[in-house]
Structure formats: structure tokens, C-alpha cells
Length: 234
Length: 234
DNA sequence: GCAATAGTGTCTTTGAGACAATATTGC
DNA sequence: GCAATATTGTCTCAAAGACACTATTGC
Image (cartoon, each protein chain N blue to C red):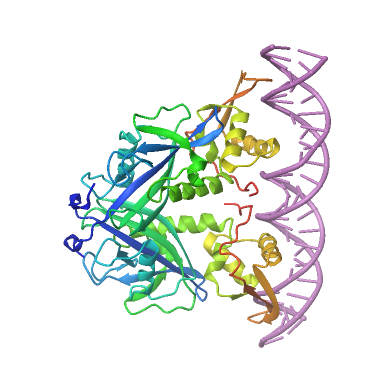
């Protein structure tokens, strides 16, 4: 099937669901971009790029990197993973298109570039904030992955910097899962990560309010995601 | 970015890793297809179709269905799920291409069409049987998904028909995970599925060798994949 | 009887989860 | 002292996993 037979207009894009943890407001946020081209010009949407356009990337990962370094994102990811690919004749008014979309996590303190801002992630997931294309759907699918994987891994910790406290981990896990996690449950996982050298207790203390907590360091070098063998309940 | 700007040759394919459980040989098998076109003409490869070609599908799912009903597969899936999408300039000699690939499970007793046959799946996963393109890689990624998901779900049961015995479940789970599963461990999950109405004990007995076992019926209507809250050990 | 397979029971260990009790800060 | 937060400990329960023991068939 030589490429000359490809006559129908077709777009393959990469879309990034770039999330961060807003500590002040205790919520997850997703990066939106004011579109400067049609369709949906001047509306906020998920940042994305075309894969089968003029730019010749080596592979999907380098295309993703092109998106990260572009002015649509311009942020360095702490973590990312591919979530899925959707494609249909209707999702883009320009014609048949596919989107391979990624969960991307960036630092809490990052600053969005001109033309971008962070929106309440769960409002996008639940279509309280309406996004063009099927971008609400993509947020929903990414959130499903985020929640299901957070039940049995330390994925929520990817939202935190290198220096964390036990409470930080408890907070972000509760926010991601949308329910309270008891200190006891989290404590077991916590201990395991310390034992396996994934978390290091610096024995320094950090004071916010009340009794100060231990300062912990995430040792990201040995592995990426830490998998537990038992899930939190749903 | 109008579609007229798309000048580079580009292929987006869907590839199916169609697996079945061969009871006689106690192994998983994957469907291979003798290619009747270049590149790699007359070599066996994973069945796949082009999405951005002449055929206009409604969406990826209907494209997948077109593949299922084509003479490359021609089998009715018991279960399928999207595993991922890869793309690079090198994976297909024709040029830049992406592949969205699926884990597909079919019945043990199905017969492959003319030009197709079933090969030992783990030989493809471990590159003991060499496949064109990056098809060995795709098998490997699918197997990783299959194994990791089988640790905490009843995914292995998708390889079985509606009428099963406890031993069938034990066997297919062991084969998928590549290690022995104790009757005790499996028994707990088994009981839970009975309690939740997912498995029904018909109280009929079926005799193979030795003491006959109870005939069980899988009640597929309520849900698809049954998730357990604790994993088998790795 | 014996081999083969099915099914049950007992014990250990791990980890979630609830909850109580104590410790250390700022005010 | 007191409010707020951190940390530790105790108990229960669910499920994996190891292993022993019994049950029911065909030969």
C-alpha cells in the first residue's frame, strides 16, 4: 500500500494533559492553551501538536518532546506516560483525526507561558468547564488512569518535589483518589518505601503549623513508579 | 493547519495481537498472517490494516472491527483492549508510520483462515520466532499488559469458554503468569466471584481424568473484567 | 488396590483500615 | 494551657500462599 494512495485528509496529533498539584488551593490543575488557529480559535484547549505534518520527528517520544519544549507547554515534565489513542471522523471538524494522549505531571511551582493557564482539573474531567474537540473526554480518560494506578502505586508522589513530608504524600494521595486515606494505611506503604531505599528520611524537621514533621527525600534514581501488591479500596 | 499541508507519506495502522489458549499444548498462541504484499511479502506477521487509507471508518473501533471481519483475521473476539501506540520513522520501510495495537483474545477452538496460522506466543514475545517490522516488540508490550493485569483481575478467564472448571481457571492463570498459582490463592478469588454472581456453580460434574470437577458457568453479562483488590506476587 | 485429579481445612504473613494515645510545635 | 499537627501503637479483617488431608473417579 504505497503512500501515494493516501488521499483522504488525515491528522494524527499528540495531546498532553499536563497536570500539577496546587498546594494553596488543594486541587489538581491542568494546563490549557488559548488556541491561536482555527478551529476553535481563541478558545482554551489542551496543548497538542500534529505528528504527520511538516515536522519530521524520529518517533512519538521525540514528537512529545517537541511539544514539551514548544511555547504551548514550555515546561519540564516530572513524569509522563501514554494513556491511549482515540480516532474518529467527527472529533475534529477538519476531518478524520487521531489523537495519542499522555498524562504529564509538572512541578507545583511552575509558571505557565504566555497564552497558557492552569484550570481546575476535575472541572475539566466532569465537563463543568467545557473544552473543544473531545478534550473533556481525554481528561476523563486520563483521570481514570491516574486514579486506578494510584490505588496500587506511588504515582501521586510524582506531583511532589524531591523534598517531601509524610503529610504531603497523604494529602496528594487523598486529592488524587478523591477520598480520605488513613494515616495507618499510608504508613505501611511509607515504611516499605523507606526500607527499599526509595524514600530517605533526612532526620531534618520542617515546621509549618503544629508539630513539625520529618523531611523526606525521594530517591528517584532506582526506579520510577513504585508498585504495591495491594490496592487501596475503591 | 489545513490538511493540504500534509505532504509527507504517513501510515497509521491498527495491529491486532490475536491470542488463544491451546489446551492440548498448554500454551498461548498468536495469530500470524502470511503477507501478500510488500514489504516483507510472504513472511508471517501480525494482522493489521491501514486507518488513513481508502477505507473510511467511523472511528478506531469500527476500523478494528473491519480488521476482525477481514480475511486477515476472520475471528470473533471474546475480549479486546487497546494496549498502546508506537510511531517512528524507522519501524516501516515505507516511511513514517504509527501503529495502534490491541490485545485480542479468541476462542481456543477457533480455526484460522487460509494464509493464517497460530504460533507459540511466548516465542514471539521473546524473539525466538522473528517477526518483521517491530512486531516482536508489540508482542512483548502486549504480554507485559497481559501479565500485569492478570495479577489483579480475572483477565486469564477471557481465554476460556462459558463452561469452565476450577482447574481450567487455575491452568490458564498459571500459563499466563508463567508460574504456579496455588489452589488456596485461587480459591479465595474463586469464592469471591461466586459470591458476586460472576461465576455460577451449575452443580453438574464433568469428568476428564481422576475425580470429576464441578461445571461452572461464567456470567459475563454483569461486567467484563473482574478486579481483585490484591495482586498475586510477582 | 492405586494413580490421578478435585476439593477442603489449617496456619502464617502481609497489608489495609479504624482508632486511640502520645509528642511537639506556635500562640 | 490549648489548638493544631505529627507520630506511634494496637486491634481487626481480608487475602495470598504454603501445605496437609480427604474425596471421588478410572484403571
